[in-house]
Amino acid sequence: MAGLAVSDLRRGISILQANPSDPPADVPAPAGFGLPYGLARLPDGRLLTADRSQSRIIACAEDGTNWESFGSQGAGGGQFQNPMGVAVSDEGRIFVADTGNFRIVAMDAFDGTGWQAYGQKIAAGSVGPGRFAGPVCIQHGPGGLVVADPAAARIVQLAQLDDAYWDVSSQGTFRNPAAVAVLPDGTIIVGDLTREGLSIMASPSGGITETILGDVLRYPAALAVTGAGALAAFFLPTLALCSVVRDASGWNVSLDARLDQVGIRRPTALCQLP
Image (cartoon, rainbow, N blue to C red; front, side, top):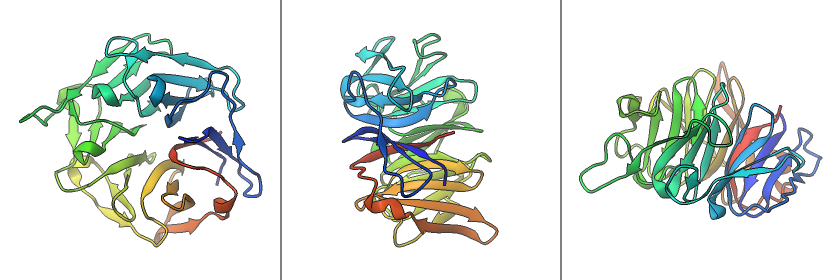
């Protein structure tokens, strides 16, 4: 498995090396991380995370240099409220799950250029398109954005930030979906913190087509795509790091030997290093 970057509520960001014997390297933070949620890579190679406690997003190199932050607390342009997820498209557009403002924010660049906000809070009698209970994890794939909205127990997919492109999982499909990943072919992988295993779907409205089960697949907290049909995942409460590989015989799951060496406390997201 390739090296991974991990956003960790207790330690900021840690880098897991490809060699299991290598200890994780914590990314130093000149201004300090508050509660880092979500993780992605910018076109310039820097790591991108949402700093929930300080209502901003942060970019930095793997060694902590080239540090930059953007945003402040609020509900206007250039502002966030407890953001908990980030994603970057192939074109470099940045997406933020602005959890406390019940919306998704899109920017053309890290400085807020091209700011666009989409969504509002679910209201009584209105749970349809454009309404969120608190978007958390967000990923970008061939079908557009995939958003975990665990407070509403659902997954939303948006080909564009517009109500007309809203696709949502049916009620009762999930209980607490907090982690998502998207394979290169558009397959959506969902980790539900209150269920064992990972759910696989082609689209939210299409329902679960397959479930990966296993003794170690309990309470998935963070997912990353590491290959065309491969995943890396952290599972609570043991914080086990697993590799999940898809081959002709199906999905094979293995527990990574780094479990006792990582020192991760509360992982919220993963991304693959180049």
